[in-house]
Length: 472
Ligand SMILES: *Cc1c(COP(=O)(O)O)cnc(C)c1O
Image (cartoon, rainbow, N blue to C red; front, side, top):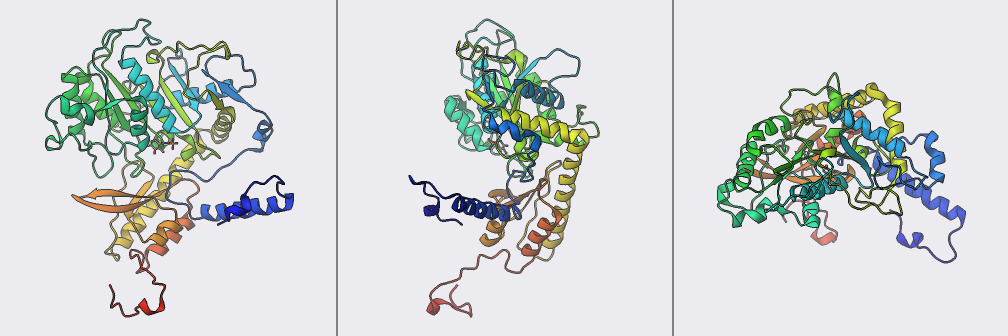
């Protein structure tokens, strides 16, 4: 680790040689970490094409709405639109010859911004604002209620806080007895071992608010952060349709947002035809899903965080703000968006093509399966290790957390998981394209040591070191 005093910025600056040495050291340190980086959802296999290099000498920005040209001429909105159009086809928002009915953008942040945008739009739509599809504002008496499971990403709670959205736990106590969790409003909407929401509970909770004529915002997961499991979106929405009813201009009843930060990037490629919508209960491409976001950098790999946000255009809250300064709609959370993101994604998608993308998805799946199988085998000899079943379509493998040294060595993220009524601390491996067999084998090797699941504390003072285990 480098000492911060070496990096201090002084008036004299640093000599080129010193600077080069510092940067080289830092690069080596990070590259070494990459060799063992198994525990987070970011693909470290980044390939930045030399054909994009010249664009780094420009300040390419997309200002405001990507579907309007605006007056800031050094932009790459055509590339952004090409990328958005591609995801619209992949996520079932469009077919090749239909007129465009979706709206979206490449976010300046990742799915955090996608979630924030979705909930912002949902709140205003359900509060009666004019939208693209219906130009009239309507009066709505009750505030929308956000419903999400305990597996929802922390950015959902943050977005609710920023937007002042009422969550089901907050509103519930004023309205009656909680229909789930033995009447306790303070508990979360629980999930199964896979990380998927308990559907019966979700139905009861939704019904509770709909019966009292509250509009609801349902947030579903496609690939949870810790397990990679998904909610059965198709089954859930087909079941809920009669309860939710139909959104009309006068009657704003519900919003369904799908957080697909990780899995919406790749799950279609696990099918023969990635663009064909299936009848699978876990299919996330459903007409009642009104907005979707993902973080492409997590799966394709990119030198920065970035996100895709898509929604049905008819529900977009018509922005009343058209600053003369940019000559277009100020439709996004961030004012300026980095266009190099759009160029980068366009370059990757056109280089890999459907076959290349399918190959990555299948390789990840294959390696995740291998790790899961080997861990299950190991668990027969290691009584301390529980290996969780791998949810279908997930590239994440969860197992009992090993000692601190191993967690640190492989950058393994941890979380508490309820296993048959008992809370267990787990670690996970996210299998992305930089995770090769040799890395998996190195982890398996460490985990097979008899000390792998013991936190051995080495005492520093010679007198307190006890080699015979008297001090426990
Ligand atoms: C990572 C993640 C996010 C947030 O994405 P960022 O790119 O970090 O903003 C949101 N939801 C889920 C499920 C995630 O895994």
